[in-house]
Amino acid sequence: MNLKILRIGVRRGWAEHTHLLKDRKELITSMIGTVGVFAGLILWVGDTSVEGANVNAATFMTAGFLAFTVFGAGLMTFPMALTTDREEGTLLRLRTIPGGIPAYLVGRATTLMCQIVVQSVLILATGVIVGGVTLPHDWLTLTWVLLLGTLAVVPLGAAIGSLLPGPKTAAGILIFPLMGLMITSGVMLPMTYMPEIVHSIAQVFPLYWQGLGLRSAFLPDSTLAVEIGKSWRLPQVAGVLTAWAVVGMLIAPWLIRRVTRRESGSRLTERQLAAQSS
Image 1 (cartoon, one colour):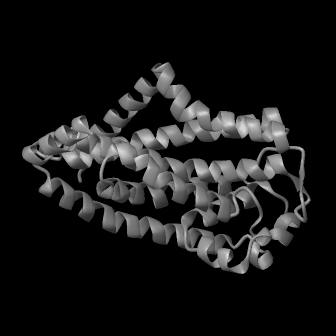
Image 2 (cartoon, rainbow, N blue to C red):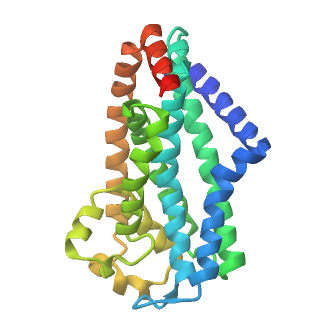
Image 3 (spheres, one colour):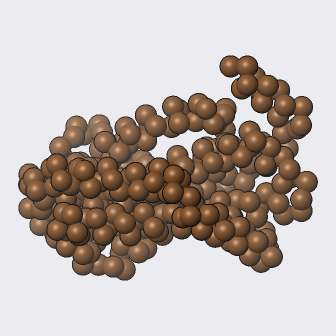
């Protein structure tokens, strides 16, 4: 990786992002869809009080949806895009270009980060306009948690994308684990509503910690009554998200190199023929 590859990747990622914004169908399905679900939930249960937290559901869910937007983009949108490009032969062609794979990954990451920024702004605006949510009282914490959370999941998304068998099965493989984590990680409901064993499992994954950090930026300290340990634990938030980012950055390049080295024109043709016949 060098500055030239980084610049090429960023330009490519920005170009893909602007293309997405111009494509009405892609824009609706990839960005507006999540915001639409969020708006529907606010209209349905937004005024409901979260028991023991002294806030309404709209405020609690705003922080949760911001966390899940980053998590879902990094661990579903990114892996599916990577798998699709692999099956279409994009990675095989880029392997023949010096710096092609690193520039591609930088480009994909840039596009993803742009999408996360747009979705986060839309979710925050929806929470304020539709749900009457108060703006965050700690913008600094909101910013570093979102950034560190993105760094924690984007490399993992690249690693997962290199392991998925194909784009047709990718969504089916990813959707249920992601939905399970969304339910059990405290981003939609307080963790204290759930059994102790769920607490232990959820705290292994970055989604819980990002949600906790974002809640600290939105919610008053009175809501600590429904948090594990009755504390925002921001040092632990930073530590766990950093650890996941480091693990992902160590694993992802090795897995991607391994997959691209094993790729060949004959293997690609065989998979394409099998996909057409199925």
